[in-house]
Amino acid sequence: MSDAPKEIFVLVSPKNRTVYNFRGDLIREIINQDYQVYVTGPNQTDVDKIEALGVTFIEIPMNKNGIGIGEDIRYTWRLYCLFKQIKPSVILGYTIKPVIYGSIAAQMAKVSRIFSMITGAGYLFANQSFKAKILRRIAFLLYKIGLGGSTRVIFQNSDDLEEFVAQKLVTRNKCFVVNGSGVNMQKFQPADYPSVITFFMLSRMIYGKGVIQFFQAAERVKNIYPEARFVILGNIEIMNDAIQPEELNYYVSKNI
Picture 1 (cartoon, rainbow, N blue to C red):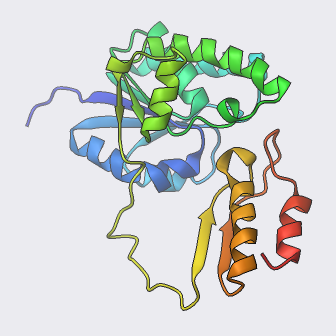
Picture 2 (picture 1 turned 180 degrees about the vertical axis):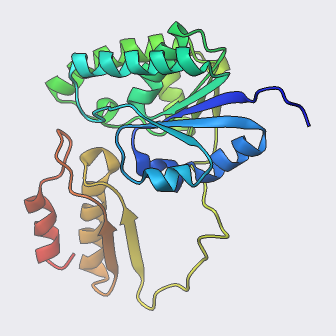
Picture 3 (picture 1 turned 90 degrees about the vertical axis):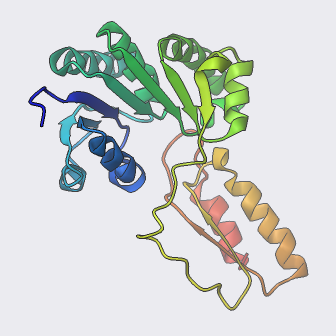
């Protein structure tokens, strides 16, 4: 066996739970490719589950939904200091802040291969409020800087790819599409269909996810087929795009 040090791969994550839930199998495969893997996350939640994957965890605080410039500058600086210290060969960031600030920090640290994963266009693209329009202009500029230095940009659907290219946030030749995050079929086994026709949505309670459209569709269908069942599972959020509890309760109280 070679005694040469392993190349270092850094996964820049916005939330600890997404690391082992959505990126666990990817991390295992990267380790199998003989990389030493580091993972950054915003806090110490479930660190034991992340480290059980065989990685080194580094806490770098980050406010996922915040818009404070000071917080974002500190986050970028801490990522830069980490990259300068451990000298990774590859980084992969996913969701808006790890993509933008992870890529900028990696460019500053002269990381040779910078990968960005766009897991969804999100609130900034869908919301038409004045505040969202201002934030969108800032985010687009930052996306151009971050993605401009990315080696490749990974999308999870072709619509987002076309939107980013149309907005001139990234050049098409850098982009490719994968079919979502995937499901481990050894861990998750198919279950029998329910006896009643059931429509199920798994989503955070925000407008940008299409939750209100799901409610409205449920109401229309149940007017014709009252026996149909509609179920939603997700967290009630505190953010600009959040659906208010009274909006949800309206449809619950009407047995929709």
